[in-house]
Length: 337
Image (cartoon, rainbow, N blue to C red; front, side):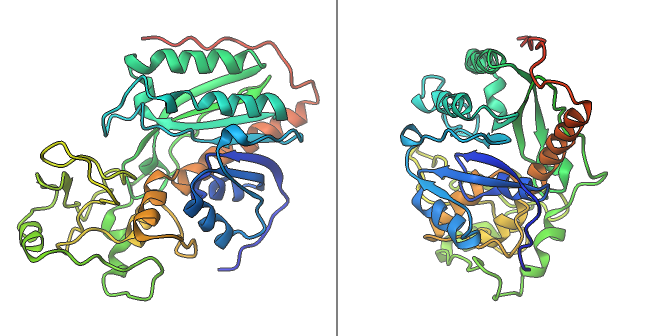
């Protein structure tokens, strides 16, 4: 499908990864003035799919930008907050949102969007969240936050993420579900079972003893040596992760380790995982297969991103129609334990 450009509102995209959040915002007339990421293979994916986008490849600490833009979007790395791995509230990456804040101070946008794992709401991480909210309120943003499930927005995957929205002097409400029925794994990837032409769709070859072990698994049953389950065909997928997780002896598993296919005794391919994240097949992932899988697992599902972008666009239009200054009194957001 040919990419059709629409009239755009300029945004700065931080921690862009492979562009899932940006794809959703693109649907509603937003366009990145610049995308920022330190993962060179994710940057290759961005340049392959959107050569017209300006991509800054490097650490966010080395990034500066002072032009006025409509918004700043992005999801700072979440490993320290995650409940899936060994979340560490002292992880240095937990403070990368401060670099996001620095950029917001410089570009003075009308809105901000931050995405993170739901684990940021846990008591052990709550002080980081409270500090973040206070900091942006200090710049005049009215903050709203909540945990959304990507399955409620047409993504064939149960994926709960914390979404934080801020309008400078106006509120942006969280989106409500856009579908009345969740899309299943079978509906999303069944057509790929006999398709070898789809991009990023080369199955891994597993050792015979692994194939035998996985063939014996029922839907929903986990392999204790792999710590992943066989997917249910007629339910949304479990969360697609970027990291490998941990083996039976507590050793870290390198590489991309997605769930097991509901029909075949093998891992999902990168394309199947991408489908379960809501990416269109025209979005091609670059780099090694491990890097492709990591990009998919780290991404914001485009359908959920589009629902968020729709709320942002509506709030911006409503604010413009009121024809009054954007800077209004801000009602502080109280975080309860």
